[in-house]
Structures are given as structure tokens and as C-alpha cells.
Length: 113
Length: 113
Image (cartoon, rainbow over all chains, first blue to last red; front, side):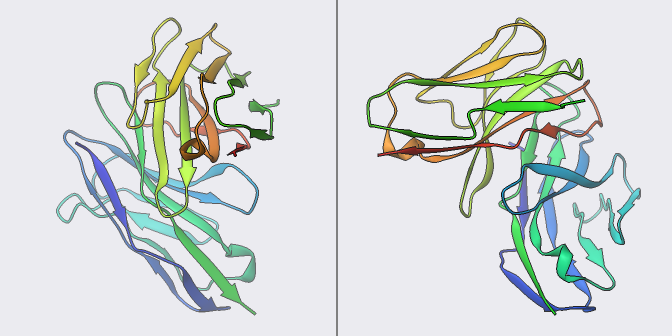
């Protein structure tokens, strides 16, 4: 079945450091790909998305490119802030059938001042 | 616009007790989902309803039942709670099939003792 694998955390960075969180997926068909962010005590909210191969999603300085050849959707940010501390989830939305959204295990990011 | 509303926010149950988690969305979305979130395991799909009048099992349906009462409401019932059901439960809705993202409620933290 379809699945999402993302790097284990926690990831600890200093403010202004470069961030990469790896995400790879297994899917049949043509899924849409997402990154969600969860701040403490809150539900998940969409960070960015890409709906087809080579699309780049971007928001709040974060970027991710849909790479079909490597089945990847890595999240990057050039300069992290303390306020970016959260849990980040990579997800795919099936393109057929029940259109379920499948999530990775999440990666916790800590950013130190 | 309230979005996705879950009740209650917190609940403690004794083993064997039953309860219903409520979820309502006011965005006229077709599809609704119940997930549970456990440390290191991300979000796992319990049940989903692709449209009003239909429900389907997700990845971890055992011990749960659902009702899609109408287009707005999708409830999750635990008939006989077990400690293994201690988790944070999230309801989500999606407006249509395809590339659209999920909108999440704030979550229900359930503890079964």
C-alpha cells in the first residue's frame, strides 16, 4: 500500500541554520504531496503542497519539490527561527480510490536562540 | 468561520467505559476522517467517510465505530475503552477529492485508565 517515510527526529538547530527534513513516499498513481506543521497543543495545519511532478511548494520560507524520479518531497528552509520549533509531517493524498491522506511519523524540530 | 470543531478536548475513561467523540465542520466539505496520533507513529487513519452516507475502515479500525450523521457531523465511538486506546484523536475534513489539503480540528486527548 501507499506509505510515507520521513527522517526521525528530533532535529535540533541553532537559529539561522539551514534545515532539511527528508521525506520519501511509495504510491501508485499520481498522489498529491503535503507538508503539515503542528505547534504544541494544536492540530495540524497545512504548510505547503505540490500536486504534480516537478512542482515546488513554498510558504513562510519553507520549500519542497515533488521529485517523481526519486519519490521524494524534502522540506528545506534557508534560515530557521525559534518560532519554527514544531513537529513537521510529510503526507500524501491518494489520487484514486478513497482519496485518503497518509502521514509520515513526524519530525520534531527544536530551534535554539 | 469555526472550521472543524471537536468535542471534548480532554477525557479520562475507565477501562470498559464507552464514549463518543464528536466532530463537526461548517465548510460544506464532502469527506471527513478520524485519525489517532501516538508518539513515534505519526497519524494513523481509523475510519473515513468519503461522502455523506458512506464510511470505510482505515488502517486501525478495531475497537471503534463511526457514524456520518449528516454532511456536517462525523462521530467516533469507543464501545469498550481499553488502555491501548489512550491517544490524541484528530478529526479532519476535505472539500473534494484530488489535490486539496485536509483541515484539522484541535484534537481530543483521551486517557483510558
